Structure formats: structure tokens, C-alpha cells
Length: 335
Image 1 (cartoon, rainbow, N blue to C red):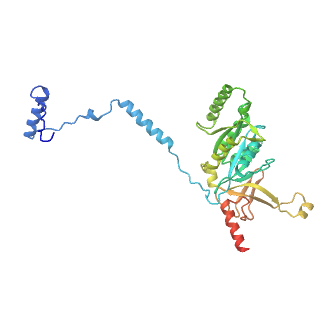
Image 2 (image 1 turned 120 degrees about the vertical axis):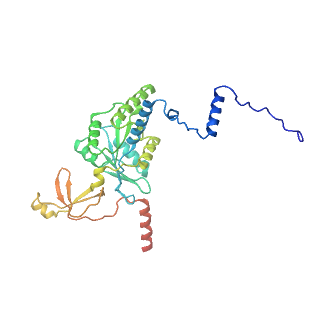
Image 3 (image 1 turned 180 degrees about the horizontal axis):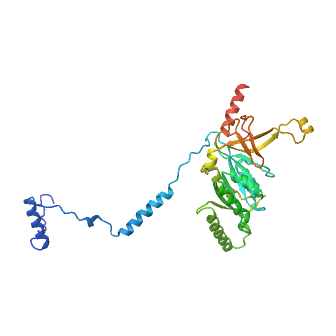
């Protein structure tokens, strides 16, 4: 209430007896005489368990060290970069051609009747990919292991892992081990969900043992009109178009060419006179890694070492969408 006086509360009593009071009096007297000594208790700020603390600190340092790696500069240019090489590998009758046809249909809405040779498609504004179907042949596996940026490892879930898969993984290890993703097919052949879940768990454990824990895996259940289900293919295509590849050391420091096609330029009369004469052959493809120079010795796999006689820059057979637009406007202006 206004005008009413504030109530005075009873204050705490100061200690006049006991150990606390004696210590206070002693401290007050020492302060007055300026003979007070500042005390420092080393145990007050130490850890309770020294051994456990040492182990925790060491463990944190080890974890931090494992995360560190030497950063590698990606020599591939972001502008006009060659298409990334995606190798679809698996044993016979696992669905490699069906997967490539399904992904091409999803990316560019074209129906491929058969997969013959490398297939290049545009996956985004600045990205293209080239699909290679790996045949069941050791030499082909070895060649594709050298140039693959991403490997789609196909496994028949009903049958399990086969010998070809393990052989190809060993080849990848000797050539830098690019990014690997698993694709498991024929899941529609399981009659009970319990069996399917058990098989998925076993396959995942085996796949992670071979690659690394947390490796990406995709499950394809069945086919409709000769292609995999749209939602399942869409998940894979989205991941492929966004994935980033870690540059491998050898490929980052050497130029190499994956040949898309070749032409024999030798004159027909020379071939008619002498079928075993020296030939001139033109190879067409995207240069990857570092730059090729004229006069550089090249190694043709399975043939030998040869000198490059001439190098020419050709028009891009699969241009990016932005480049197509620019070219169209220039043609319109000239017309």
C-alpha cells in the first residue's frame, strides 16, 4: 500500500563461533597486517581419472587424423568437361542392358532397342555421362577398370554374389578404386517378405565388407514393359547426376583417351597390293586427364607403343544444352 512503510526483514547472523568464524578472523587479521598468502590448490582444477582422460584425448586425436587426407586437385575442367564414364558390370543375365535402357529412357525419353557400344547422354546443364556395358571377359573388365569414374555393380539377389564380381573388384583395387554403387535385381522372385528382408541384410553386410561401410545400394524389384520400375530408376538417376568423383592420382597426372570409334585411313590400293602393310588409323574420343601433345608416345592396349602423327579438335558429338542454344542463335543471325 502507498504510504505504508517497507517491512524490514531480519538479516542473517554472522558466525561468531566455530571453525568458519576462526578462519574468517584469522584471514581478516592477516589481511589487515598485509601478511595474507594466496593459496593455490592444484587438485581443485585437475581431472578425476588421469588414465581415462589420456585415452579420451588420444582417441579424439586418432579420429581427427583418420578424417584428414591429402587434398587432390581435380584436373578435369568444369567447363566443357568430358562425359563421366559409368561402367555397368555384372554376371550374365543380371539385367545390365535393361538398366542402361531404363536410365536412358529416364534421362532423355528415348527407347533403346539394344545397347551397342558406349551410350552418352546429357544429365544436366553442365554434366554428361557415358554408359559402358561390361562384357563377361577378363580383358574387357581390365580395360574398363582403368577408365571408370563410377561403377554400377549389379548382383542377382536371388542367386547372390558370383565369381566375376569379386574378380572385377580386385581389378578396381589395383587401379585406384573409383566410386562403386550396388544394384540388386530380381527381388520380385522372393515369395515372402521375411525371406526378402533376410537376404537384403546378408547382401548388404557382404557388399559393405567388400567395398566400405555405408556404400550406396539400390534395390530393383521387377520389370514393366522390358524396363525397371520408374520410381526405382529415378532414385538411381538422381544420385548419378549429382555424384562427385574423387580424382585418382594416376589419371590426374596422365592423359588418356577412351576411343568411341575408329577409322582406317589407309589407301585401298595399298591394302589390295599388300594386306599387311603399315596402316594409318584415326581414333575419335574425349581426352581425359591432362593434355595430349603432338609427338607424344601412346600405348595402345594389346597392340604396342606408337607416335601421334596429328591431333585435331573436332565438334562435340554430344554438346551441352547451353552450347546448342548459342550455336542456334549464331546460325539464325548468319541466315
